[in-house]
Image (cartoon, rainbow, N blue to C red; front, side, top):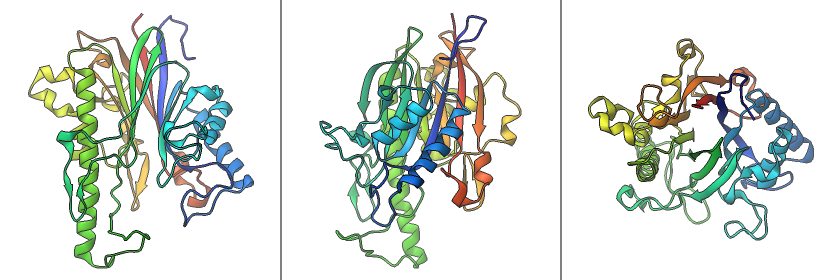
Length: 340
């Protein structure tokens, strides 16, 4: 576990989208080939090589289909199997969520942590005040990929970690029960409406996460970290809906419940703006994998319990040919130092 020679209590925390990481020889999407043993080993080895460079103590992951696969990755990185938490992709037959079959229909989010686990929960239902009607579909009431909340004990300091994988910007076209299209994908007006549906879903998810964050942070001094694949850039409406960072400019009391982009408040900020991207969307690099911290990690706060020393991006593999990549997302990692 990370702890430097000066006596500072510190840890590394990272987030990584693992691009459909599943057990070998299991079908996760009907139109996608299952990994054979060789392909699975290649995927596991490739993810291990990427994540080993980050040597993180806490790793939030997205797009995982099987807990066995995530546990194998955790072990290959020096963790124990029980350090991997991913309820909605469980391969345990006793699981109330999956009955041992792993994730179904859509991949799950998880967290690998060296620290003692104090609490685990899922955000499955959209908060009532965040529910909105999606065009042609109706009320959006449940998360498509429920965020995972893991509260850990880091050197005696409880910290709440929330990882999310919000609805993508990909157009959401209507389909029948058999999955057959009900709309003309080539109609530009239909395409706009389909993208509007995705935006509405992502906005409802973001608003619901925000309300959960407020509930945990308001009038407390326990830190919180939100990280994951937000499927939009840091300054987007949906991302800011979750963090409300800008509100602090007008109301300092908002610090209590706002979240702050770790990359913007890091002690060594300066050069990162030239190398920061975690995904290439339609040929353009962008940061959609993000890491936010609460006021307790602001160095100038009277309630500060530590600070973000630096943020690093591991994205060289995104320059490789697509077939050579084991994931199409970069890894973002923060080094956080706690006060003694």
